[in-house]
Image 1 (tube, rainbow, N blue to C red):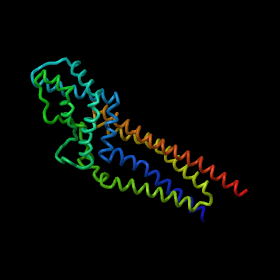
Image 2 (cartoon, rainbow, N blue to C red):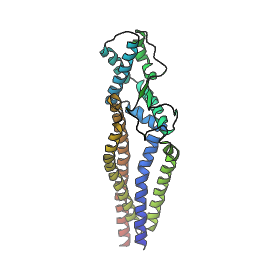
Image 3 (cartoon, rainbow, N blue to C red):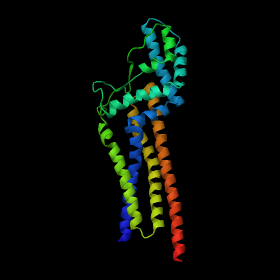
Image 4 (cartoon, helix red, strand yellow):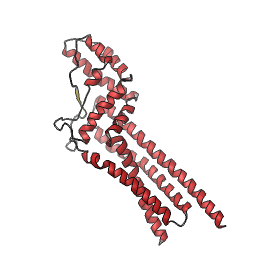
Length: 278
């Protein structure tokens, strides 16, 4: 009976841990606006993202110049844009633009603002661009909205993920608490502490390995979602997703490492127990 109870508690702990890790990661890096902005700012250092963003900015800068009746060498504008995206000014401004995109999805702010857009005006207003644009008597508009999707699917509406913003933190905390309680009850119910620690280490190893596999499966669905974007926006989104995956992989690697430590420590405790009994 005690063994059966231990097994049930171990299974419950494993399930809770499998929910706690992705829930905590999502809350920190996706649902929380500051965490998402930090992820975007880090991704802004990716050369692929910088190149795509430079191309997008150059396109809009040339359009503004054309509106004034001037022609300009595209390589000159692209060079200025590339220098900007490689400068220290770009990451915080890119993060700020992503805050607005996050707000549209998670809070439903600006309900009438459709489709899903980001404003490039702050970037085009940077000194890197302003010096060139002044030569063509161009004044950057108050807003330069760029749609993030070619077509907005019916399932993608302002505030669609608002429930996650409301309950996400509670869900991640609850999963973490349940994991801790389950681990303690498993240790209390088990006959041998060493074996219980080892089994909890196995739980972490299973969750870590399962998480890696789940990311590979989920990538197909993420790609389907990204198909609503094209061109430079698609490349930017791909880079953002890639950095998100990298961050999740780090969490899973830490989970695997913790599991390995628990397995070794549990085996050591079990060995000490055997020596004492002898």
